[in-house]
Image 1 (cartoon, rainbow, N blue to C red):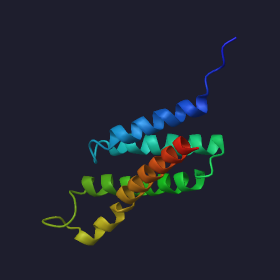
Image 2: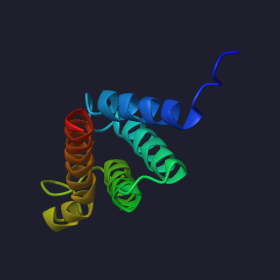
Image 3: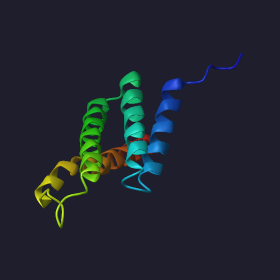
Image 4: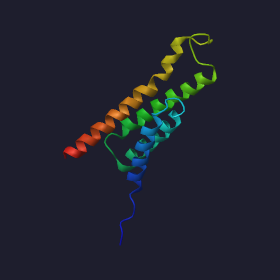
Length: 116
């Protein structure tokens, strides 16, 4: 009899692919990055991965940054001729920082898995 598919691993792979593909366009692709980060965090939680808390907080930070990215985009941006100053751009910073953190964590996990 065949082994049933491992849905937790499938969620993880789909999340990583969505996470990487969403990075091709930082604004419109951010929705795909959010979906990917949610799937990665969910699969890490379901598997019981030791990095599940890091994936969760990165997911929250990405959601926070993407929310403000779209909010400021709907308001016409910030700085320049906009009514919002450049300082409002600091609310977007969690998105790229958390994205880099997840990429780093995925690379480290891959290297450690290959080494063991």
